[in-house]
Length: 125
Figure 1: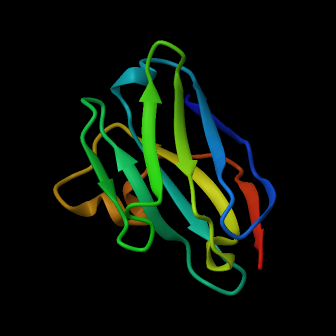
Figure 2: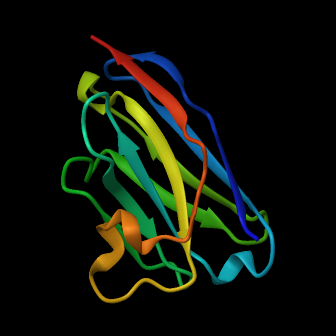
């Protein structure tokens, strides 16, 4: 069973930077495709970024150029470096992982087998 634990959230001002971490435990962690999603109050959970087991990356247009996803397989950790934060980035950020994600389904919530509990990011104007 894979467990995911997010950390690094907090309250920041617009324009600030923040780095989120997702620590994975369990078997064959390096084999997982891992992603970040976020959910703002009253809205559906939305895709932010994905990184495959081989390092392939996709990023949502809404954060492209501002957010960077990376992973350290030796440390079993995935990161989301967020810069130039905006109030609309305020959300609970979730780490997700899957053994396989087919085709272009990486942005779909149901494609993932495991989820963390989330970490709150609040950006004040």
